[in-house]
Each structure stands twice: as structure tokens, then as C-alpha cells.
Length: 309
Image 1 (cartoon, helix red, strand yellow):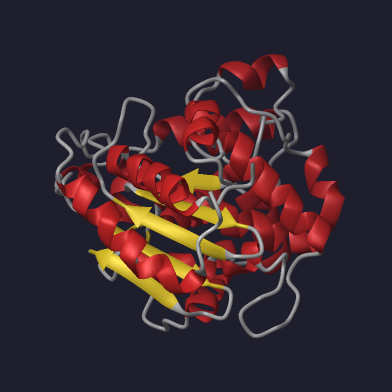
Image 2: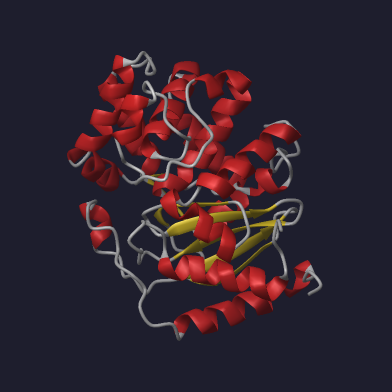
């Protein structure tokens, strides 16, 4: 199949929407975060952003939703840009094979998380970014506003409070890593930053645009360089192998793109050198990935021939 021309994205998205609307069974919204439990699992939006900022979308593509773990990609990029390879002394780059909030591996791997996208790894990245900026969550929000062109993006204080009230496992992860000297900041301050980070509300359009620097090999929307070409490659590679919890192999098999999911139902994906995508549908499978979102990205890459393989 010849890869599709960019001008044909809208018809492809229209077809994907039509097929998804006929698909029974959309999973269940995350119920362990009460503020997310009320989301309609049949909501669906999808957006594609070209390298020049042109955006196409269908469904609820402009409706804000809780980004949750999608923000781990951006905090990783912001910290990697500041400290470079020193980061990898504190967090690994391998798939975990365990649930995203597991404590199991930390003990026999001396407090070094397997990768930046499980919760333990994301806590380390946020901790290190906070040490360098004094406000990791604020740095993230500023970046997302600038890259998306949407100055109204903000934290959802209800979601942040809900996560804090049910955040014992994340606190346990942070304390455990602190015991190994792998956390620098006070745990309450770190957790506050982390929960605020995960509470950002943004739409598919916002997030497709904000992810564009990874398709442009490290170049931001204003033409300045955030990451080296090699660093952008590294993040895309970790997204491909670790971005969808312990379902990364199946996601690579079905979709064939670097991607990162969140329990708010969003998934961002990158076609290096071509475009970026964001899909949202809050019904999740047993591994925490959007059922309709994965199916939509599967259909998109099948219909367009766009893949890293």
C-alpha cells in the first residue's frame, strides 16, 4: 500500500469514526480515580496534526479530557532536554511486564524504575524536573500551552484532589525509591507536583499539536530545538516499547507507531517526519488502555499505510 497523502487525512478520520461508532463494547472508565469514573465510555474523539500545525479531527476532538499519563511524555522531554544522559542513571528504558503501579521490581532493582512511563519512573522524572525548575507541573503546563497554541489549558483541581486522596500506592513508590536515594525532593511536594501534572485537561487537538516536536525530530512549534534528533528518537523508541503499560507488544503489533496511553482514555501517537495523533475514548481494557482508541489507531495505520515498520 502506498502511504496516504496528508490532504486525505480527513476522509480517513471520517471512516474511522464511522467504524468505531458501530463497534460494540468500549470497556469501562477508570473507577479507582472517582473523578474519572463518571466519564461516558462511548465518547470518542480523534485528531491528526501535520508538521506545520494543520489539524484534522472527528467526534469529540475538541472536548477537553483528563490527560493523566500522557503528560509523562512531556515531562520526560523537558527533563531530558535539561540533563541529558544523566537521567538514565536514575530510570531505565526497558518494558516492565508488570502493572503500571507495581512495586515488585523496585526492590530487586535497587529503587531504579524500569522505564519513565510506569508510575515509579514518572515520579523520578517529575522529581528531577522539579529540582531543575522549582515547579515541574508549571513547566509542563507552560510547555503544553505554547505547543498547542491554547493558553486556556489548565489543571483540573478536582481530579488532582481525587488522585491525592487515593494516592497511597504512588506515595509508597516514592518513599521506597527515596530509601534508595533515588528521590531528591520531599515526598509530599513531589506527590503534589505529580498529581497536578496528571490532572491537566486538554483536547485531542491540543495534544496532537503538543506532541508535534517528536514528529519534527525535536523541533518545537516555533522552530526552536527542544531535543537533539537522537533524544527525540530515544523518546519515540521508549514510547513504542513501554508507552502502553504491559500491552506495548500488542500495541506495536496492531498499530505500529510510538504511542503513550493514559487512564483518562487518551492515546498520543507519532509518525516521525509526517504527523502526530491523539485519540480519546474513556472506556478502558483490563490493562488501562482505551479500547476504542487502540482500535481507531489500528484502523488509521491500516488505511493510510503510515507506520514505523
